[in-house]
Length: 385
Image (tube, rainbow, N blue to C red; front, side, top):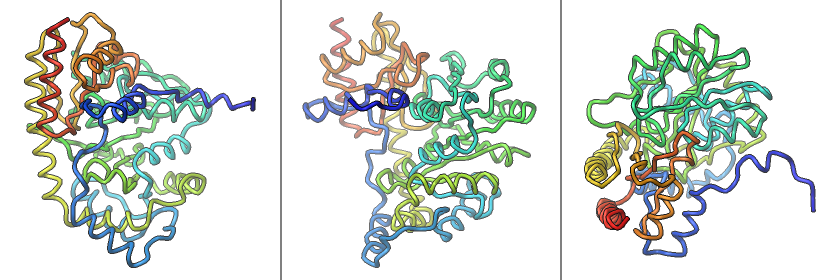
């Protein structure tokens, strides 16, 4: 057998991958595991993509991305995120995950530490460990609404700490960080001379009276923050593979150099279609957000009516993160039980870190009727325990 690199063991098989195989084999199963919108991309964006394909935009784009898209993003960032950036401070990527990868490649040396949320997005730790960095888990607690606790964060900083990852609105918890919380994190970063990676993939999916604040919009934080955003969630354009990073010009320059070793460029026709999304799809995005909100309200109400389950109300993204400790089973066992007895796929909280134990992630990026049926099945199955 060929000798393999140590890093092949970093990723492993996830419960999400196992669930996808089960769904494929059993179409009667309803999945609440989706991490992407169930809506198609806006019709005008699809038409634009078709038009650009027909016109022959099937070749590479520049490493940093199409100038016209970066120019459009300068306006978007200023107006919507209160981030002042020029086109040389923006890098177009294949989704925001590549932006996260390039950020870590640019900032982190082997054995240097990155503080990551736990429970948190499953992509952070593997990326850090692939380059032999060290992912340090900041435990997020339900009683804190899964927000960062500044004093605990500050105590975790060591001489090896280089980067803090902040994800708001959050996957898997749906938390939208308060501006005050972000200001406290910013103070720590400035005081300790640390960088912040602000993952804002769900920036437009906020509910009730919550408001998304971009970390780089805080006074004096531009040089301390790499902001990563994407067209995948906001515009339901996951398959188009367009995201972007915003940072100081020197950081973007180095990230661009690494991009030569990853994807060269996001698809050219997708970048051009992304401009159409920015300019003419706001009403479509708002319709999606309102429908997610309708599903969210129903789902949280129903979850809190179930025996031995409780769920705080998420303020962003499209996930619920109910507490299932009352069922007296591990998260993995609860998820397995629901697949077998309720024919519903959920994601155990431990997929998002060890402090996700006792929770499940349920996605309401699922049609309202299917969501209702899924909760009916879960209620019936739990009632028989």
